[in-house]
Image 1 (tube, one colour):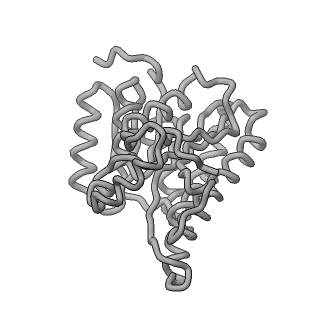
Image 2 (tube, rainbow, N blue to C red):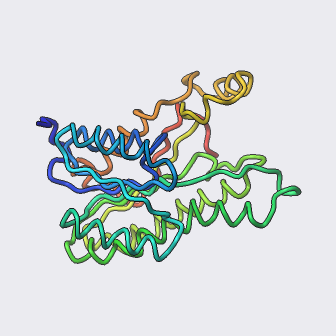
Image 3 (tube, rainbow, N blue to C red):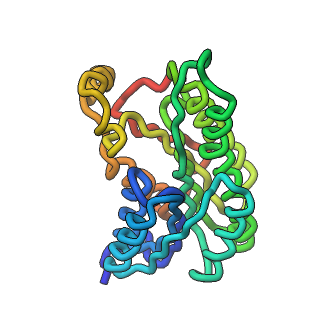
Length: 252
């Protein structure tokens, strides 16, 4: 039985939860007592293994094959979660992709894919979940942005623009939903150790570390800790904010 009670009795959705930062978030929220619904697109085996792992923590957990960038799939997802769990009060929009390229070489498809997966997906999930949250007059929405959503980054005009959009969307939604006791915050990770960054050339990693005042990359768990706090009642007076989890990397 789970003895951690920070999120005991709460039901959380984590999009893109089968790997990387999303998996770390799902584990962290479950370790604090939350029941977990999470989505995946292609990594079914990893998703089912995580589902089993979370259930072993003593919480309810279900994996859903769903593309948050698809409006109709997002609607069906929320309906299914409400039917399976009987409620929903924490939403973590984590799903996202990169299609890095200098603008002069970037294709329209690369732009559209990133916008759909990183920004439209946040709209889709929030759009279909918000009526339930408003009816219950409670909830915490946490949207994953990035420090490059504030600073920009060469070769990532699509990614940076999408993540800047996430921040503005989050701040707008916080203003709309505050009177219903629904909090909306963004989290902007910096250079975080994941499977993807582990494949980078060591020289690239060293260059990033040199820019970070703490002198190292962050961990998935360090990002997840901030999200668990924002999801909890301890952050009851925090809304409309973007939290940088970046080791001091200047986002401006």
